[in-house]
Image (cartoon, rainbow, N blue to C red; front, side, top):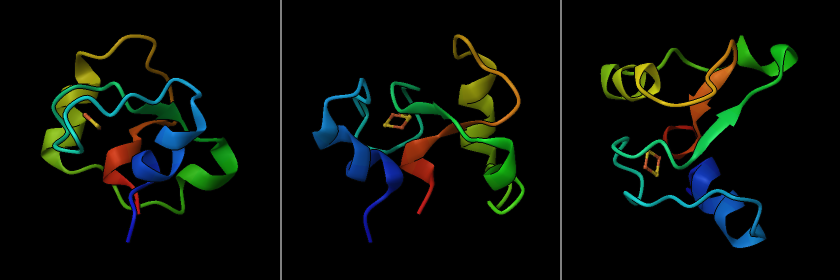
Length: 68
Ligand code: FES
């Protein structure tokens, strides 16, 4: 199925998806609300590493290309 990035990108809300979902650009960074973050699987290493060098991260930060 579509990743969250692929679902959001056509909406023109600033989700660029520059690396096409390979967890290598962070242009698909989203803040997931507290009520939902615990329901998601933990980030894989590639996502966690990219989030470590992304801007404006906070609790709930995820790469939407890694969410399905
Ligand atoms: Fe590049 Fe998600 S699209 S990290």
